[in-house]
Length: 254
Image (tube, rainbow, N blue to C red; front, side, top):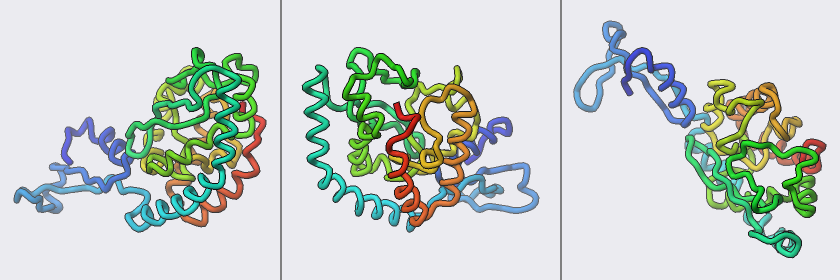
C-alpha cells in the first residue's frame, strides 16, 4: 500500500495488528530498487508486517481446537444444563450474557458467558471491572465466576471460529486500565489482534487476570500476549491448557 509519510507509522501498526503480509510503497527509495506492480508501475516496497501464523499453522491450530472442543462440549452438556437451571431459577432473565469484543484482525464478535450479574446491572461495554464485593453479581454468579465456570459457553465461540482455546483474552470495547482505554495505554495493544483470542492464555496462567486498576495491570498482559503470538506452537498451547487447570479457581476471579 501507499500513504503519505506522516501516516506510514500508523498504517504499519494497523497492518501488523490485522496479521497480514503488508508492504509499504516508498517512492523516496525508487532510486535503489524497483518493485513491479500489477498495473505496470514501478515502486519500491518495504515489508512492514507478516501474520504470526502461516496457513499451515492456522490449519493446525484450528484442527487442534476442534479436536478438543467438540468432545468437551458433549462431555460437559450435563454441566451446561445444571448451570443454566441454577441461573434461571434464582434470578429472572436470560441464561447467557453476550458482549461485543474485539477479535482477530480487529473484527468484532459476540462473546458468550453464563450470566453472572443481575440483568439491569449488566455491563455491556466492560467499562467497570468486577470487584470482590461487587453488588451486581448474583449468588449463583459469584460461584460460577469464582470457579471460571461462567466462561464455559466460549467453547461455542471456538466452535464458530471467532475464538481459539488458547490465545490473548478478548477485551470488551470499554475496558479501562485505570482511567484509560486499553488501546490508549500502549500502541502495541493492537498487535495482539493479529491472532485469534482465546478462552485462556499465557497471561492468565501467569496470574495476570482480574481487574485492571492500573496501567501496569494491562501492560503485564500485553507483554504475555505478544510473547505468545511470537512464539506460538501446538506444544505451547498444550502446556497452557494444562496449566489453566491450576488457575480455574483464582484469588483474582470475582
